[in-house]
Length: 254
Image 1: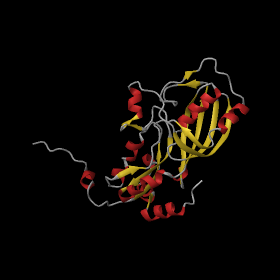
Image 2: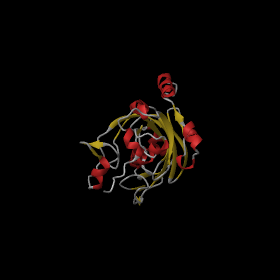
Image 3: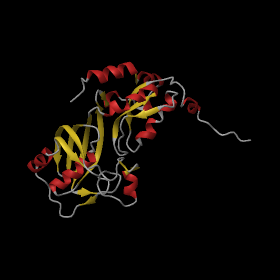
Image 4: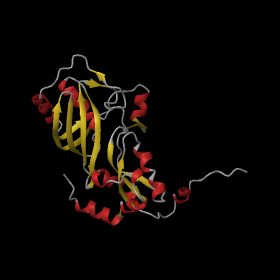
């Protein structure tokens, strides 16, 4: 009789976790956040692994992985402010507003002046109502929006209130805009690009996106899984006690 293979960690799904903590993980571009985080099951010999927020496949940067009993912190960690740098290309559009689809030039797009760009950006600071892109992980009646969009339902989703704590124009040289943002949970930078393109009447897409920080967890300190030594992997695990202290201190609030 052929024996069915069982992943060794599956035995621990209902057992008391052997390892618990939070890992500041660097996610490379064109990797699924969930699938990349699940690699930590083998690293820490623990089946119970989750993540506090996803990054789009085309983006790279910080993803917080919660191991073992630290999965109880997922919701709290998701409320931490997130810091991004992004490169936006004006004069183009597509269905996803990023590099997952080819950029389509907008006919008769006129280069925006820097003053016009600054004026347009002002409307994205503070509390704003933002419609998530159709190609997103937002659930519609229990179904991920991107699954519906792939079937042809490409309308943007109902607006949600998000907060842009900081928005800084780093550089502008038509058609390229570079921004730094600090924002709340649920903010889509691709939607910022989409709405900026609409405001300037020229179209826009995200050409690059990096998450530089989630609260106190910075990209400079993130674990690069594929290149890390065993010692680095062990050292990267932030204990439950330290995570609790971080969350209680609130020192990282914008």
